[in-house]
Structure formats: C-alpha cells, structure tokens
Image (cartoon, rainbow, N blue to C red; front, side, top):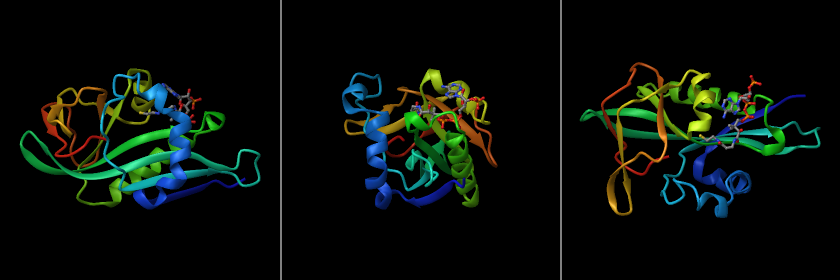
Length: 179
Ligand SMILES: CC(C)(COP(=O)(O)OP(=O)(O)OC[C@H]1O[C@@H](n2cnc3c(N)ncnc32)[C@H](O)[C@@H]1OP(=O)(O)O)[C@@H](O)C(=O)NCCC(=O)NCCS
C-alpha cells in the first residue's frame, strides 16, 4: 500500500484540513485548555498525509503546519521555520504518519536556505515525542503578538530543531502571532 504525502499552500488547503483539526481539537475541549484563548498564525504550507486509498480508513490522516517567519533572537533578525498543528486522526495513530509528516516538514524548512532553525511549541505530554525526533528544549523566553499587544508566550514549551544555528537560551521574539 502506498502513502501519499503532499506539501500544499496553507490557506488553499485549510478546507481539507479543518475537519481533522476539529476532530483532534474540538472547540469545547480547547476552550478549557491553558492555551485555549491564544490567537494563532495561519500556516504558510501544510504537510498532508492521506491514508492508503485501498484501506477502510482512506482520507486525510495526518497534518503538520509549516510557518516561515523573520524573528529576532537576542535582538538580531533571523529567519526560522515553525511547526504547528501536528495531528493524526485518532483511528490512524501509531503508524508513523506524524513522524513522516514531521520529517517532510523539516526537509521543507531545510530547503529554504535562509532558515536557521525550526521552532515548535508543545504540551508536557508530547515533549518526549519531539525529543525522540531530534528537537531540543529552548530554555529562554519567547515573546509573541496577541490582540492585546506583545506578550510573553509561555502557554506551551518551545522546542528547536537545529539547522545552522543551535539556539538553547536567550530571547526569541516571534514578531507576530505564535503557531
Ligand atoms: C502526537 C501525535 C501527532 C502522534 O501521531 P502518530 O501519527 O500516532 O505518531 P507516529 O505514529 O509517527 O509515532 C508514534 C510513536 O510516537 C509515540 N508517541 C506518541 N505520542 C507520544 C507522546 N505524547 N510522547 C511520547 N511518545 C509518543 C508512540 O508511542 C509511537 O512510538 P513507537 O513508534 O515507538 O511505537 C498524535 O497522537 C496526535 O494527533 N495527538 C493529538 C494532537 C497532539 O497532541 N498533537 C501534538 C501537538 S504539539
């Protein structure tokens, strides 16, 4: 059985992705979470994985959003790649789809030569998942824009993926909405 992996425009592919996101993060559940109030950026690109056509589970199985942003790290501008909205349909988990999609997202970021490192935010129960896939904890502070202005963004823990830079500490300003 073959697996299809696509990297598509973020806005154009949103209608295909929305049902998966609603299933994984229902609005009534999200509202009660510590990050339920956060206003998020929209993905620039999306990695989509369809379950094999011939299986009973055909259809969109996994999603990873990709973001490109010029941020500042300790006051210096740096181009980075962001990862967000990592989600696999509950009935398709444990088959390596999220790992495949993450790898495709990292490769896509790597293909953009200006990108110095990757950055994602995750809840404590997912930290081991990302650490096992080469992501490192960023111990410094992160700031982001929200409707009320610039805020310290500590709703979730930041993790970085090293390309040409290996940030572990300092201050990252996302210079826009978080992802
Ligand atoms: C986390 C998630 C994306 C993993 O998707 P998946 O397609 O099942 O992942 P994979 O099949 O590639 O990898 C599964 C492996 O990761 C492990 N794993 C899954 N969740 C984990 C976690 N929270 N911590 C540590 N390991 C985890 C599994 O045990 C499995 O290990 P194995 O390969 O040794 O058997 C999926 O569980 C999900 O959608 N969760 C809800 C949404 C969410 O929390 N997303 C992350 C946002 S930051």
